[in-house]
Length: 199
Image 1 (cartoon, rainbow, N blue to C red):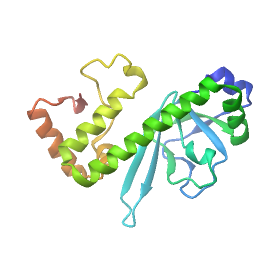
Image 2 (image 1 turned 90 degrees about the vertical axis):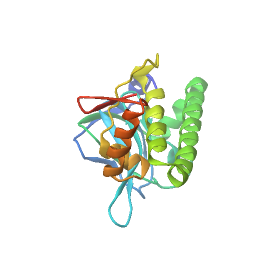
Image 3 (image 1 turned 180 degrees about the vertical axis):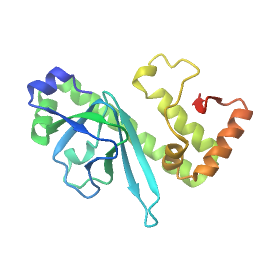
């Protein structure tokens, strides 16, 4: 999102996070802008029974958790490293200063946030009304179309998501995801090679 030389000039620090380490918790106040240098971060919530729901998965070059930086509310979800990761961390005031001085970067954030809002609106509808196969295809297509290293959108695209992550993203049980993925393969909607999903 923001070029690394701009981040460095602004005094951004690069922090290491181990697998499963939290960057912030649901209910915390936003103090920093986060952008991934390497690794993978997820934002999640847990229901009363302890079931995880993944709000989003972010990787190299992507930022996450920005909305509370623009308004006075707490984080609506946790942020956790899926694998060992390095993340740029910039104080909120310095981040807002960058946006103020760089309208093109500000526009990119507006566009990205609009895209994420659209995704959330679609997923709310999907989870409440659509069949498992439809939900899974929608998630797979979203990640395929929004992954940085798939800019040419070539087919087939290898998904990094595990069956568990698909379940946590769609509100389904893992067993349901496994059955639905097999049906989708039979219908020719996706391919499975060495346990990996290709769409």
